[in-house]
Image 1 (cartoon, rainbow, N blue to C red):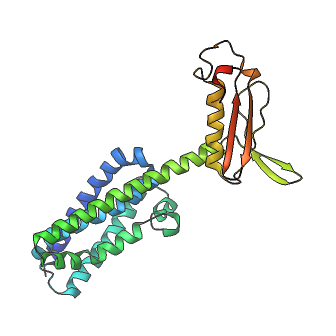
Image 2: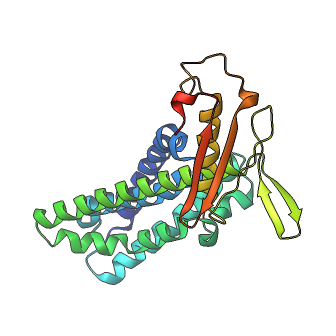
Image 3: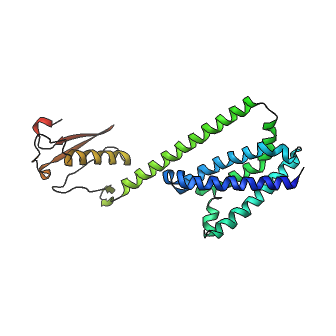
Length: 255
């Protein structure tokens, strides 16, 4: 086994990962956010490391399993030193660097380093099979990457929805316990009773429905001079959700 070649391959991995990090910050982070982009980056980076290992494992000459694991361990040690040094040079606090390794906080870097440890051995085994198996693995990895991207995008949208729902909400202490409510609009107060306890997304949808019904020109297009102060909304709570009865002062458009 040639250790000098193994170090050269590690240098190639660093260059590939730096380019990958720049592309992630430019194209993925604006869409998913910083942390989800870093989580997806661990998966994509692991795939890039495996690709480099597959292309160079025979050139390195690591044939025995022990040699392959030693190469992976050296790569892991060097990449950790490089990541920490680069992060400190860029001004990141130590807590920010350790966050990537905290699995409970959503940091997947530890999983990526574990994969790097076994990447040379896995690459050697992959070189023993034919190209159909390589193609199947590549397609499976691509499908996994797309699935993770969609899952992180969905998680981002859900978090944004809950943040929007909680904006402006208040808690009223009543004899029946605390009740969360929110106010919007102007004019005569409107009472809203929601039938599904804890269904925040349902409440948000009903709130938007009422706001659109009250303040949208489409509701009373035949009578544009309707006064929103005269709008009355009653919501009847039923077992499977609320039923809205809207009376916007337009007899022709009453449901």
